Length: 86
Image 1 (cartoon, rainbow, N blue to C red):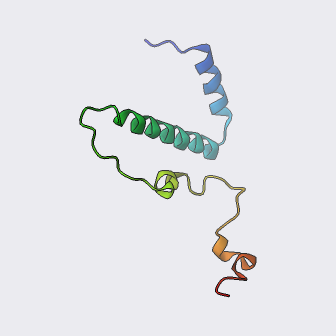
Image 2 (spheres, helix red, strand yellow; image 1 turned 90 degrees about the vertical axis):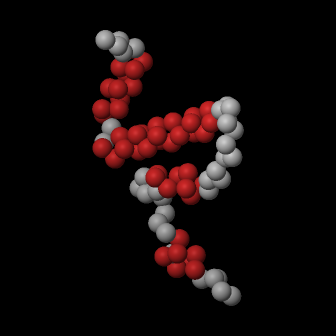
């Protein structure tokens, strides 16, 4: 049976205090960090496969809409669109 460290217990208690939305954001961020770890380890393989180029959008699309306090789509902002096409 695995023993949980005091630090892990504290983190777990704090995690349980978060809302479901906040918990999902943490899960998404952990998945992102783990995927970064996978990319850094893939360069050490003996096969040295050619790295796939990933855009910023592709790397972060799972996190889209995770923040409620950010501005919406700029294309709906009339002030942003004022000088377009002039």
